[in-house]
Image (cartoon, helix red, strand yellow):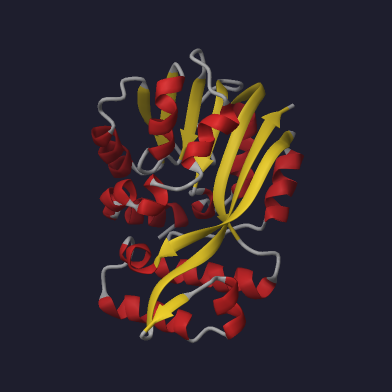
Length: 254
């Protein structure tokens, strides 16, 4: 099975969980969207890999039109049902690495907590550059890997074990290189630690107890250095939460 088939399978199965997920629906980055993007009533926005539609929902009242695009048809249909009151959101099945839009179409493009599922991030960024208008803005929010190989290897292995549709969380240095190569100039950025409630996080994608136990053991057996870096909280040998690195970056196309 190809990587994109994995994505469709996982997100079809978990479509309701991504709508209700506290990480996706209540993230502290969501209130920053309006402040960073300064949306205007005549704008058309593309939200790539919209998932549960949280970004599309947030921007909808401020712009003329939002295109909520996603690779997974079941996910889109479920999100469209939840957001049926938002009449200026259209739903398009689309591959982030091969967008079905003309050049220079969108005033603003967003992509939140999704790019670590893309097999070819260089194609994704190239497509963003292509369909974004000149002087248009691109907002990327995603889980990232540390520049330290110990931490980056741990988090990518953990995510892959928990969700086989995970491809790789990139380092900030890798994202900066791709953005620079595509004339997407960084105008603002913010790195933060994001706390993940362990039980909700693991139940979002895993169904079998044996798989959940395997993930728990992997974390519990990690070194103290790993546990400290990811702020792994354990009570009575049960994992309560941990943190991962996230990057929010705003770019302008030149």
